[in-house]
Length: 371
Image (cartoon, rainbow, N blue to C red; front, side):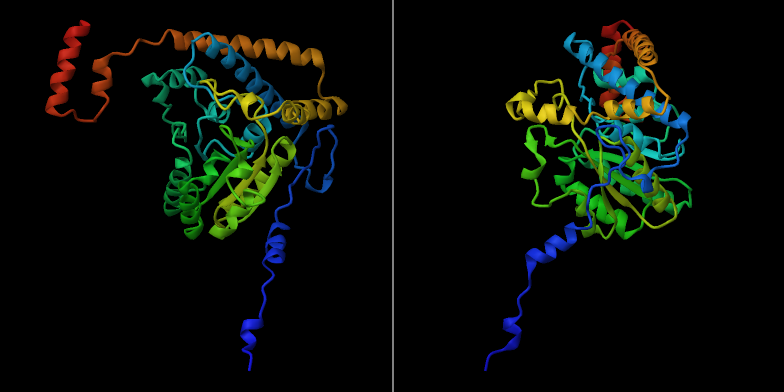
């Protein structure tokens, strides 16, 4: 007699397909500047829309100036942001100054908008100690260089906020490469288990340096990784500022209400190298991929949208970009005039209370430096 249990067949492929049906990409403003989903159109005033576009233009101007500074040898590490303006600044718009930001090393636009003086961002890039001295009222940590480590930190900050009964949300960013790290799963799982008020962003810009995201995972989206932690996951067009804002705002409201964390995948692209420290994207990307993504530029679609609404004109934009560049260069001058660091200063900052050996070394170098 045949055991009927052995005849049970599970259609694993159908099961996987049914799961992935829940992760369709959300889009509101397409690459032609047209509204394609008016039901999700966020409640943003004309003034807010214009300011968002100005912020994205400022970010592009900052990226372009930093690229020049890097080539001149006047900047340290820099991760280009061109192409990710909607992913970064439309998401930031959904949060409050009281919220806590944990950025990655590519997330200086959000960090500066949150309150970090721009010259300190330049100093951080140069490895200057003043770049890590944040204003006291700035709810943020230093940009995380260890890939994905900010995810576990965000879970901890979120739990602390919850335990203190604060009406705040933590928002943190990583890339597709970060979603392949153990810290990503651990942090998201911890936050989910304790319902910490955290919004996790994975900016899927397609490549973890030179490794395409589809070589990193068998998952059809990165958003669906949220299911393992028992939290919502949403895939959004990361080149669409209206969709990014709408999803981010909904996620913040959800987390603030005590429901726990949310994972948002912004499907986007960087137009330049991973960093300006030697990466050459032409070695792993073809020209067609650049052209495809540049046609989806968030600045182009937003410019068309605002122009057709009578809220924008080209002359206004050219004058604004000139002013942005002037302001950025003023911040560069402030960074250039920062006092040069000394060995004794590094040693003094190593511990709150120096050891006896450190005291002797500090004294030695101060004498050598002439202090």
